[in-house]
Length: 321
Image 1 (spheres, rainbow, N blue to C red):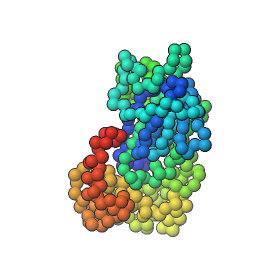
Image 2 (cartoon, rainbow, N blue to C red):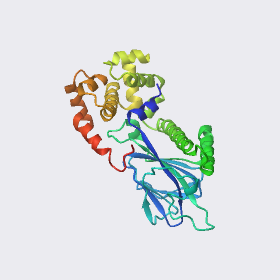
Image 3 (spheres, helix red, strand yellow):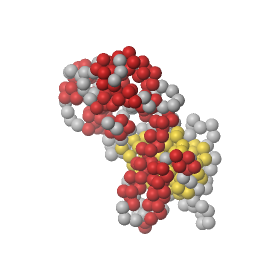
Image 4 (cartoon, one colour):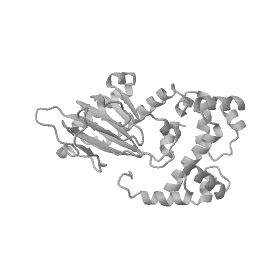
């Protein structure tokens, strides 16, 4: 099982292209991202990343890629001082060759090089989110000169620039796909970096036997797992698995199983009309009562209230369909 892809699926990942934009001098864009991860790729010039947690604005050059964690309010400007900040709306359509200026902010003056960036929003709407998304750094920047360590990123960036320039038949699909590739490769890079820092989900994924146990929980969260059964599956003793789980993830296997079950339950509640009894069995609980009790304790609302709230929020402007 591809664990990272499963996390995105269970979290209900939705994404939207936020358009190619030219940021002229004395202008800035603010990205509302309360429930979205922001991806920015600088195509031309220099833009400055402004965020409350940064001691000073971060200069991004052409070829640099930045990923902003869910809920990390930030702005992109043409200078180190924010001026004329405008909020970005979700782009509903891809601007074709005839309206390439759509979505720009104060088009650059004649003779001045445009600071150009293409952005995407990757949304995980429901809370609580999976531990991996919670442990993401507020911002993750990969410089163009460091992209050489990832040939996939290098090639994807080159193709992205080509398609943005050509805007030929099929460019919209290609641009969406290339942004998705860049997003996933940056997420992979975050797992590698975070896994070397402290006990967390990313570090646990660097231990092959702990990863094997985690894969089993994701593959069959409805199973009545015991520590003994999970340890046997991973090829470890009960004590060894518990210790390695605690050391790498900072959690216990059965606590993590509950997180996996609740993630799946939120996804099913929001995407189906199945009864609570059916969902309870699907995620490993014997009856609706015990499932509802754990769900409310974890999510903060009862399953039926969660389902109603989810239906109401689908009309909100910043929820990606």
